Amino acid sequence: MKFADKNRLTVYAGNIKENWMNETNIRQLLESYRRGDVDADQVVKVLKELPYRDVGVAHLDTHRQLRDKLGEVVFAEGKTVEQLRTIIGHMLELPGNILVTRLSAAKAEPLLQDFPQGEYDREGQCLVIKRQPVEPSGRGTVLVITAGTSDLRVAREAAVTLELMGQKHELLVDVGVAGLHRLLAYREKLDEAAVIIVIAGMEGALPSVVAGLVDKPVVAVPTSVGYGAAFGGISALLGMLNSCAGGIGVVNIDNGYGAAYLAGLINWREPASNG
Image (cartoon, rainbow, N blue to C red; front, side, top):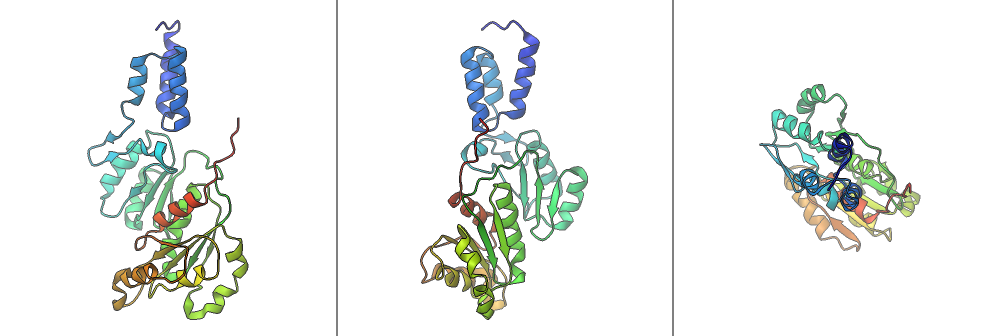
């Protein structure tokens, strides 16, 4: 390949390195190779970190944003501040927004000093570093319902995830089966939602009630809220798995992120193209 302007190639390669990690830019890179704007060695240089990046304390899945809607999400529980600092630092060298879940306030404080561009949701224990606009991608509204206020941490984790996916969402708090009239007062919201996430601890009965009232998917999230016999959420989990109402899918205990991601995929609509 002949390149009349070496400086132009260097600048072009720098732009590729900055922006390669999504399907659109991979296609642009291959098209540039086809036209002869870059040579094979340059393509290899750009793609060599595509499967993963070894950062010592983790192998970042740099390929994930090509396979799903969010890219790699960092689960902070069990990781030290130093490990998180290393992981986030390397992720900032790659494009895309960053989501860290299950991040305690004690760990968030020093990380926000290192990464002041981050936004910490104290209720949801999530850290977000937003570096690119999020395009609306939902067919309708995802309604997030909690049985009690004690389930709010999980609901906020779900809400933050939905926001990063470009999903319109609404939160309905403390409408559990101990006072069913509270839920029925919002029947219109239930009917208007495209997908519903229902979060409950204790006996976990609320998803079955909601699913019995609507004709749309219900994603049930058991939480670890409850007294001793709740077994840290196992009672709620088993109750949801044994629901007699149809249309319920159950995720793991306290997994607000997983529920939101599933609901987002169900509700997904490709963002409008600017072209």
